[in-house]
Length: 320
Image (cartoon, rainbow, N blue to C red; front, side, top):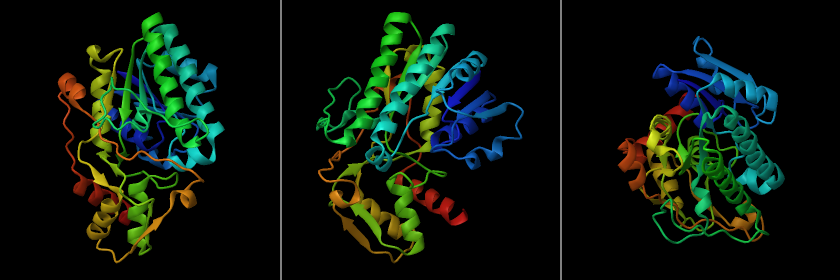
């Protein structure tokens, strides 16, 4: 197939492009480099099946042309990272909602399949763990900017599902849970690369809050393989799927694990949320997916465990 990846020079997008090429597909990338990097796709430039354009999904004539050239759209372009979300809420909402709106509008003209990368953030403060795709979501108040990202991605999901219901545009929604691996930076608040860089530099590892909040981390190769499998499975159309890992660890324990595996002498410092982000900041206490729906459809099983994930990220930063 010929795949268009919006946000294809980003962390997940570049790994998806790489994997699609390995499988023999053609890849078109559209990215404005606001959070992505040309370095992420530099090694792919020599492949005749790969091409890229540095521009925004809001350039509608260009987007329409690129969608016409492809068979499937992997829509990954979005504002990401808690730090960016808190500091630039207008940018977050406009980028996520309008970007998805124009992708769906132009894909609908030729009924091209759209695989939308959503996020585990949409579950909000729900205590019904592990999170199931059909479960209720619980968001905080609108005065807390932290929930703007979750809300914007939920609007993306509602709009995509509306296009499927009303216009029969084939769509698949994937809610990604804390995807990590090489090429991810800590620039916008991603916790694992931040911890690894601090540990390797001998700096204190900065844990926000009391560190009891827990997450489940998924290696990027497991995520992109699942995205590709969903794009090739007709029964996935019109559905929402969690993609993640079930291993749960507190952020405090993650910091300790990074220090140990990096053989670092770095101490661990705790920083109140109010200092790290903004007054009254709220966080998700737990974030663990129910993967039964994905497993039943495509036989999904994450292949890379947490210690191996951390070791691979450490090796990446040591060699960077």
